[in-house]
Structures are given as C-alpha cells and as structure tokens.
Length: 111
Length: 119
Image (cartoon, rainbow over all chains, first blue to last red; front, top):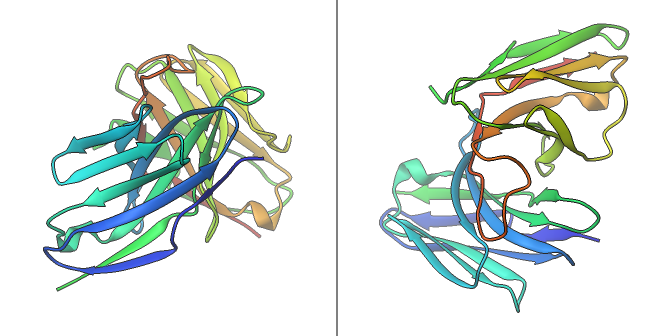
C-alpha cells in the first residue's frame, strides 16, 4: 500500500530554522510536494521535488532522497505568519495516478 | 483572490436532500480537482478532470457525482449523504493537463472550500 508519515506538531521560535520530515511508502513514486494551510484557509503550494536534492525558494527549501523514501521541508528565518499546517503529498503511479497526502504537521511559531 | 471560487461557502443539508457544489476557475487552467478534508484526517483527492474528461476517481461513493461541463466549471452533485460526509470540500485547478510529465509538476491553486454539514 501507500502511506506517508510526518510529525503531528512542531514548535519553534521566531527567527529560528525548522525542518519538517516526511517519509513515504509507495511503489510508483512520481514526486513529492509540500503545501501550507492556515486555519480556515485553503492549501497553497510551496514546492515540488521529483529528483534527489534540495530545491530552494526564498526562505523555504525542500529536499528529497528517493533511495531513502524521505523528504523534508526547511523553513528559515521563521516568522509568526509561518504558523500553519504543512502537508507533504506523494504522487504515485501504481495502478493509475494517485495523489496521497500526509496528515499534516502543525507548526507553532513562538515569539 | 486565488482565481478559484467556490459556492456556497457553507452548506447544511439533511441526508435525503440533493445539493450541488460549484467551482469556477478564472485562470485558464486545463485540469480541475475535487478534494475532501475531514477533521484530523489527511486531505483526500476525490476526482480529477483534465481537458473536461475524468482522469482519476479515487474510489469515491456514488452519492458523490462530479460534472465538468467545460474547462472553467466543475460541480459536485450530492445526494443521500451520510453524517460522516461532513467535511471541507476543496476545489483546485492547475495549468497543464493531468497527469503531468515526469519531472514536471502542475502547481494546484485551491479555492476557499465549501464547509458541508450533513445532519
């Protein structure tokens, strides 16, 4: 079957760096993406990795290791507005294309 | 303004009612999606339409019936729902057709969602 695991909650202080991990199990891996969702809001796309390595977009970076079935989202220079839920999602091509989302990591940024 | 609108924003319905959710995208995108987000559960992809054809149907009960009359509009028709169907229903769209080419990604733009309560 297919599954994703990510921590349920992470707490960090303003200005710090935080890493949110995501491990997955799938036989037809096609790519790993990350979304941010604030309370009461819609998800917004952050990044996508199809190949191994680090993708950087401003304060956010995403990393993928396909051999380890592992990825992470790195948030630098944390701001209070970064308090939100972060979802990893795997696109899988087993028996047809599927997109599977993790349960989400709730990030709390403290002053 | 995300470019993807959904109506209604809130809906309360009984189990015997029939209702429809509407999604409209103003971005000129070619693929549209329906998602279900329940409390404390992962986001679930329900249906995908690409170039107005259904290309993904993730084992969704038949009481949910999608319709895509053109590339800008997507409907989700609801009938004889159950209380466990209460959730946030999100619509999204993406530029390129689905599925994407290997190594590329269709960034999905989400609407604000419809909060559905089934009594």
